[in-house]
Amino acid sequence: MASRVLRGFWKLTWLETKIFAREPMGFVGTLLVPLLIFVVLGRAFGMNRPMTAPTAAMPFNVAILAVIFIAISAVQSLVAIISIYREGGILKRLRSTPLSPVTIMGAQVVVKLMFTVISLVLLMLAGRRLFPDVMHVNVFSFTAAVVLSTFSILSLGFVLASLVPTARFAQPISAAVLYPMLALSGLFYPVNRFPPALRWFAYLFPTTHAVSLLQGVWNGSGWGAHWGNVAALLVLFGAYTALSTRVFRWE
Amino acid sequence: MTSVISVSHLGKRYGRTVAVEDVSLEVFEGEIFGLIGPNGAGKTTTMECIEGNRVADRGKISVLGLDPRRDANALRQRIGVQHQEAQLQKRIKVWEAVDLWGSLYPRVVDADTLLVQLGLEAKRDAWFMTLSGGQKQRLFIALALIHEPEVVFLDELTTGLDPQARRAIWALVTGIRAKGTTVFLTTHLMEEAERLCDRVAIIEHGCIIELGTPAELVQRHCPERTVVFTSDDEDIAERMASLGVIEQNGVAYTIRGAGDDFVTGVINVIAREGIRVRGFRTEIPTLEDVFLKLTGHGIRD
Image 1 (cartoon, rainbow over the protein chains, first blue to last red):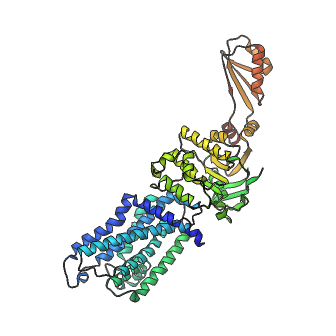
Image 2 (spheres, chains in turn cyan, brown):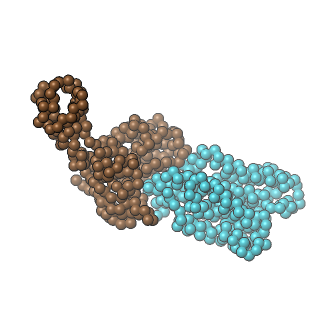
């Protein structure tokens, strides 16, 4: 089983990386848009001026917003790629080779995670340079939290990719789910002040737990205080992956 | 003859639509077998069930002695497929696709030699999206052949290609058979079936309605032969009366008969009578006429 999943995995992953890098718009959307959000909003909220408690003075954490945008653009790109591949019969063609379905999808996930990390690194570098007074976060811990969050949010992407009828609908359907998800994530308004029904609804989305974990890591409270978020991200990953294997269409 | 593919009473429906009603057929080693019929007749569904890419509702299928569903992984190593109207990633390069496919099988042919054979060596570094229709199909043939499969499945290989590209593809397919590989193809082009296939099965509304070599089918269902010639000689009708009724239209004469010996018979009479012929042509029915006769409609209707 393991050897079957690994057959062609690195080659396909490398190939998909090159193919993605050849796509000018995908590149811009994934790497530059979150960076732009971070830099523009960061300046607007005065992150470049020395403050006593800079992040506390902001209505919400701009760095975490930018990071969530990185994850969301990864999901949007995943949904778009899968729907284009399905419509063009590419998924079907790949599936009639010895490649395992897990390999075909796993390669896409790894490519997305790689670009997430690259995007995050750009963001950190920009942050160090432009907002040196607020970037005190532990880089490795924060990166790990971002990768885990993106991983979990990507599983929702597979469910979305199953719902999208044709490639033309990939963008609007993703946006219709991902943007409300962002609004409910607790980044702009604390989840525990939501009415109970809405609160539980918000907990069904990985972003809510991702934001809580990222805020914790940003504020230095560490992973130990957020094991509940980590567990929720893993459980939601499992649940969405299980759902998508049931509803996923290869053609 | 060794049987390579054996299908008995295959059935498949999608919801309430019956795609394949009842298909039974046998394909032998080293032949080009064609499943022919109009769009929506069940060709692709039948083929995909045989390849193991689709689960049949009922019936028994055996390919190289394997069950396409149960032994799917083993079978994928031994068959090559090309799907109808398939695409690859827009920005994948030709060599990259061949390289990826080549890495998936334990034993493969040399990629560069294969590209030369398929006339793609100049397109090695080209993105898939920049290839012409014929080049894309040749690449798909390359991907289907890279692991030297024992059976190759080709679904509507030349649909949408111009006549020149189509002829080039036909030559490639005949080349595949020359190496001993069995070819199973679908087409709705009767000319293609007639040129390429050793045997054909005609499928209509999910059922095989006739099966045999193209020549057999023509002989069986459309034995009529027609000779039309022009001559300035006199009394043609009387001199050729042994051949039956002769229609005359000015200097053009039409004689109808049946069977393979009919045309030879006409030539013999013309020679014996010493008739001076200015023009001479024969009208021999094709698979297209067989199809029309069996189904009551043309294949493109």
